[in-house]
Length: 423
Image (cartoon, rainbow, N blue to C red):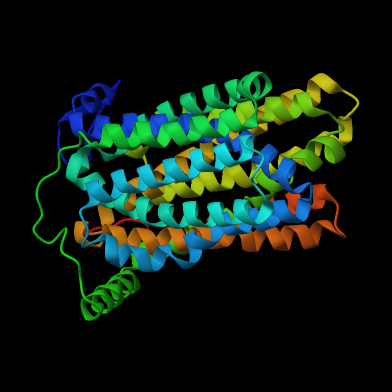
């Protein structure tokens, strides 16, 4: 499938991405990581509870995992800009591999305790705070702007497939080989990613690899914040992402209560919900390049956002016929599929436009600020939703968030929020 690039008559399709050799190396490394992370997503949850036996510790470990993204990443970007990004990415993956394998070894040896688990999580997430902006800054070096839409979508589709494989096999791996082995597989995946990235070929940049002094770092940091502050499109990206992440929190944190309390079903519907969401994400990623060729960015975001809000509200319709199991399943699966498609389109649109809008020398710094803001929204909104759930029915929370989502994107349309450069 092909379509015309927005600036030329050149036809571009998914096949063209296969010829971008350096970008394909990044994709392959990312897929190896994605498989390991998918296995780890289930295994680590069991590990935390097995070690602590206390839900409060689960919340604490979650906070430790998010904290560096909020506090470290905005300051990491200024350092990353002047570092050799390939070496940084390889080194970060090796360090995370060592930490994760070490964590698995300590668990299998019966030596792991909650405080060690907390420390390992904090260190791992701090390393990731440097790895993420480096990966973002490398993108323009390996992929031309005209390929951004198809390249991003191609990566997302493959990641979704690998994620589903990882989630599908995680239970068997844990059941046959144990939690420690599943965690170790994630650690090995980091080494695999580092090995592949070692073959990455990037143009030499004399500014990279030179250690900045404190004064240079401070000026680079301030310059990055000034740049973001002066770019209305980037500011709007950040604001919209924070709002959307906050409104969508119930989809992650209240899945089980939604299935049990609102729809009156069990774990089988939760599985169907998750699979439909993942399939929807894959479909959304695949169709995004074709949508982007036909609709302006604001229309893409507003249409997908409003449909997402309607989908969240529509979940609660299941209360009226929860005794009709097939109908409830059809509603939940259809809603999950639509929301997955819409969320994927919104994520792809933001990612592509962000890379197109931000000047290459500012990508690491701007990306760090952007990611920090987006990350901060999730734990803050999670606390708010938890407090709200103490005295408000789950169905009302979904209705409220659905309405807020529709309002946010309707306002964006009414005031024609600027989401792309016209220069």
